[in-house]
Length: 159
Image (cartoon, rainbow, N blue to C red; front, side, top):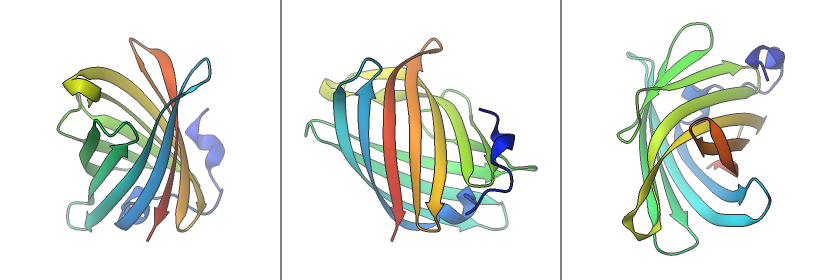
């Protein structure tokens, strides 16, 4: 989907507004052929640094297997024309984002911790959709070598 098709939709999903403050969330990850792979709860907090147009956003995932968790420490920088870039300590390169209207599209490659101390380098392609000023839903895919093998459905709510 081209991000431009969301121009003019409301409410706006601006990362520098939505990801600031405390958030909570829930996630389910499904295989592409169907079937629940895992569930997670999310606790998140963000701060906006206006002088650098940067969001410092931390999100902590606690998975239902009780064996692992994952905490991401994002630095998200607002660019021109609805463009964003992001850094995180386990990323390969930068995350690239685009925003228009109620949508935010975020792509990146990250070495992702798994159960039993393993990790996999995965490509993520996430679409965030604002529902109202306090909630958004994310549909994301994860895969390797450009081939997706899992879909994530995530809901965030601002507290």
